[in-house]
Image (cartoon, rainbow, N blue to C red; front, side):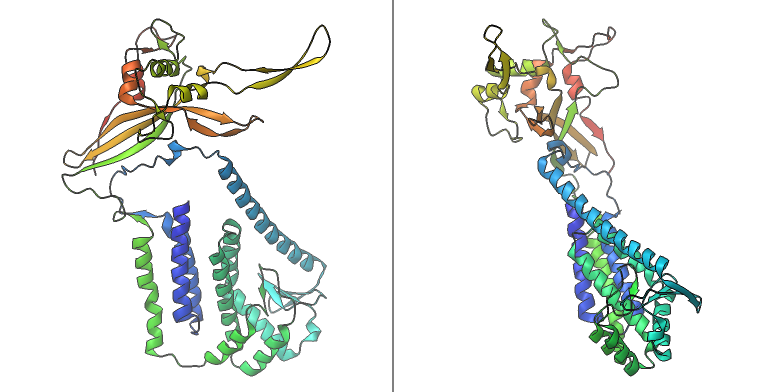
Length: 467
């Protein structure tokens, strides 16, 4: 998600800089509208596209296996984002309700195939779909009314409402992104330039009318307001519409082609952005995955069967560590550099004290007692498996070797809410293999075949691939 936002922001920022530098002051209103919509959608959708895929992706991300999304920060960020979505959506709903109320209680009349609503409230003329909203028709002269009708009909004919819906939807989804609002502002101004062009035959009179309407209240965000956007810019553009275009200015229209190619190459996941392996070379990557030994097609009692069938795999590992047969490393250290002492390990395997209140049967007084429960080895059913993936392009094979194993403990708060996970310790898998390879996976209903724990964790290490 973060990479998507970075790529999207980069595309939008580059596109807006080019627009402001080369196109913003030009009277190519139809092209400018296309440019803004095209680059906006380009930035929103292009980072999602993967093209010219270069075979299998061996660099499988292990982030999902290293940490769960149920952390406190992730939950807070999700709540903040959803709150912003709710606020943005509520603003849109309020605007829709305002329009509905104005339509319902206003005086309705038909003109030029449109429904004219006289609201009786002070605001600039605006339209939505095929409905005009004005304070009163009789407050305008015949020429002013013609200018209003021509302006709003231009909005309708050019389907500007579609652009507004696209921007409003994006306002809700990406409410936190400042470039969305800049794009919306630029696009609204271009809309007004296009609608103003319908009155370009009378720029002086039309400009004075715009100034008169500038002091009035604007329309809801989902409608086209007559006085929206900077009046000074609109009046200046009215006089520019008649200016002849030159070949030099027309060359600016070609800027969209190199921009698209640049974004396609640098802001999509393509074959040129994949990790390349030179012919005959060896490629290596460390990958982590989490195995939940309780998630199987049928319930299994996941114990080791030897002398004692009730010994769990974790107990066997802890006993071997305490006996000095294997070396344990910190649960966060997948490079096996931070050794874990026996004392530190045993501290992790001691439950936290719990305070309970008892009543003395003789005196009847309440007594506070501190108790400790034994560590529940059966509660540990997740294991992080650390693998070394080695790809040899000459043979076309990826060899997967397990290099480490770590038991994973779920962490809960005092209120019983899930807070995340932690690795208790890491073992070199070769060390763990010496402990568990001779033990069978115990299943009381399985009397036909046996499965050792090494087979369970390491079902197959070599895969044939075709890059």
